[in-house]
Length: 94
Image (tube, rainbow, N blue to C red; front, side, top):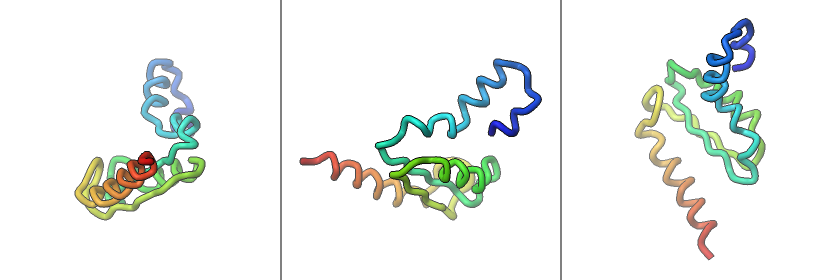
């Protein structure tokens, strides 16, 4: 996103754009696992941008390409979400 902010001098606008840029939040995630789910049909945030963010993230991480829906949660995300939530809860159990 930083490359798209070139030429914007309004500090309020810059703070807003950076606040919604997921790359801003990658550093403090490890050692927790980053899980991303993104629809290949998303017309708001292209899949390539999501993949770029994912590549920048440190391990552990998992990316799910979803073929249902467009922008936001879709039914195709339910199964990977349940898998990841179960994985987290089983690790927390003694």
